[in-house]
Image (cartoon, rainbow, N blue to C red; front, side, top):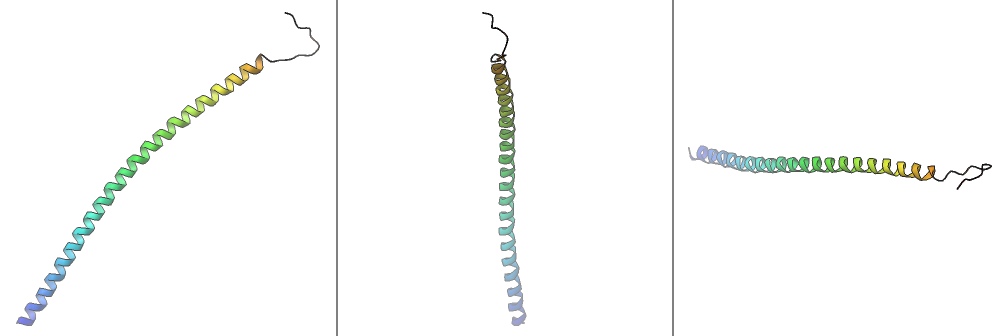
Length: 85
């Protein structure tokens, strides 16, 4: 019977090792899930910042275009017509 007892002990030891390994793996997976959630949040924040910067750049470009057009309007030169002061 002792042969069976030692075989059963080995099986229990293996099961305990597997449980420990599984617990470690579950903790690692949980940690990774938390890290992924943090990275998603960080990515969302960066996406929001990019959108704000793109909007700002677009508005600045519109303003620059308007100012360039306004500047050119005042600098028209027409030949052949006398200038009145």
